[in-house]
Image (tube, rainbow, N blue to C red; front, side):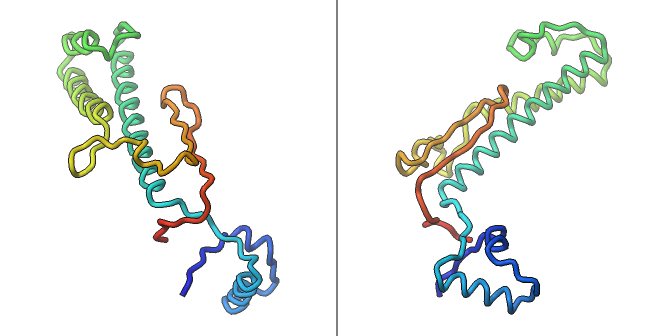
Length: 174
């Protein structure tokens, strides 16, 4: 048995039946398939889906790191503390943060945020690892030159995307 994944919006555009029942819908889908007009949905290959998942995970970590940095900025603002903006999270800036004269509550928050930042920075910097503890190289995930990808820096807020000229979905498990 061969399975086809129909694109719901395109099927709706092709066949707009007034009476909507499962039996009628099944007949319409069968007729469209029989005459080779069934609009099929695209399903990314497994490697592309895995690459996208890794990209989303890294992006999420970068957003979390930004949130923590913003919390530190907010804490300094609430305490009316002027700080060296360009180097606040450098080694020198982190030492400056650790040595601030704050009450215990704010001191605890700063220490906690710095620990979280350190952990996030390490994970983002070292990259993601496979079970054999080798760094994942994005190039090894791309089967041929028909795949192009643009990675945008999360700080520049540019759009990111991926295009492919390959057809079908050979590794699809949906």
